[in-house]
Figure 1 (cartoon, rainbow, N blue to C red):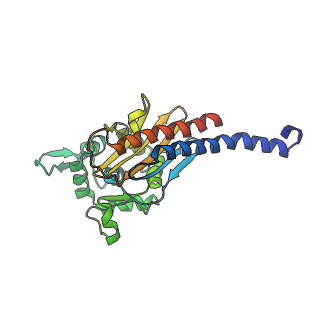
Figure 2: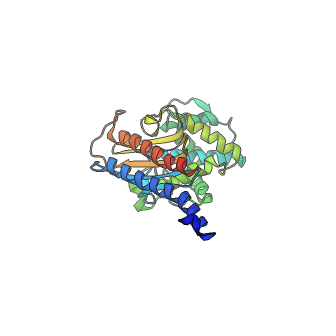
Figure 3: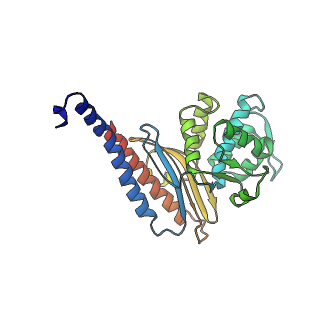
Length: 280
């Protein structure tokens, strides 16, 4: 019928073919996500975006959450920014507070991200400060994400610990990195490369098979978080997932929050990626 209406009819048909699959993908993804988190003892916040199609999905995506170690991603940005501006060199030695040893700046950054080393993160914050991290975030237009260690604190931020962010902010950072928009294309590419070497496979990486993943995780007694990009056939799916308020402390790989993040990541890649495939 649409083809019989010249001009406008054809345009309408094109719009239907292009838009419906994305909305269907979002709806089916939402159903699967909500079914998985139903009855879960904790609060789930997430945002995911297919960077190739723009299709996105979120739950509480703009509400502040505790970052735990995912704040190390903004810390890395600030270090690369400082090096680019000539305020530091990758060969600069930093002193390890635990044993007095010295490591070059580049190695400390790799340790902070690849094995989520807290001592390395503290060394970098001692050298570059939380204020510098937050100034870098301000330049990116991200005013909710804050590094809070040794920063000028306000009382309402004390509950967040070392950092606060939102799932949407974390995905924005990942998207800008993937598009080469932070510091420089070369720096962004190098930071993505470091994230690809993250060794924590308990969350997003867990059910991805042979797919390449670039991510950083966070762990606290009642919290698990993961922010990363999955390079799937259906598109590059950037996501940030935080599970908080879990009543049981469990530091095994099969923590309920880690398993939930793993399942949600698979649902998001399959759902948003499937929409990408239908749009091609």
